[in-house]
Length: 325
Image: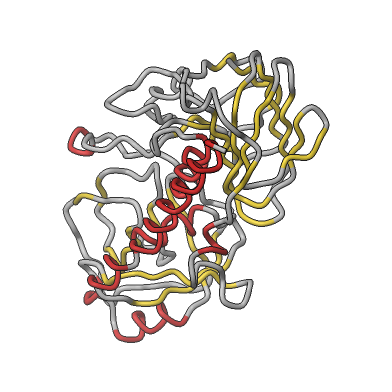
């Protein structure tokens, strides 16, 4: 088990999401950066979808009650274990009584802590992810608080072997994943259903604007500032299914990118949809970050997942070899 010592708001238990429940009005939830979560689990020999902690407010501190292997992935951050530095994108073993402390990232928005055996909270609708608005999943359906005692599962794969090695982060290992100029995050999208409802001028504005993720953004969606996309005439639409990555445009004209905790349905016009291969990159963008959109085809969107899948496969194979040494 682990004891949460310090946890500001919005830190939650997440896995790769609650799939197959959208027809009941239940959002997917899951890690905002699923690649970081899966990578942490790969370092430890867990299943990709084992639950970990998504940390997005800092400082965060926990105490281990038993010897436990763990990994830190996600945003570039500083951390200490029993007072000694632990690198990001690294796995190691803690001793009973050790305190892990994580400070605010230098770059990126979310740090993921995974544990050998995964976090052992009950599955709800097939997932251990926290659904805060619904009040279920995760730890009592809520954000983590000081004093919480969180159970860790057992795993023969993560209880033996070597643990003191790391991985190259995906934004370094995957070509084109890092911002080209270090400031603007270029996100690939496809046109969505109502794209043609907008005038050519508004379409041009969408592609040419450098959008800023506003402070009114969270796991449910990113509100963008920097321009307005206004229809020539109001359009009444029936509510329709919505998934993470969809870029909706409310009447005020400021786009919203739906994220992990997005509603399952909505009636705003859809301008575009972020491709799956870039959602993890967007999940590490903090409020104030600047993004710009690039159009790709459906075929390009599908093929863009190959480097991501290859990265995780290579990481898992290499980690399995290191643990066996």
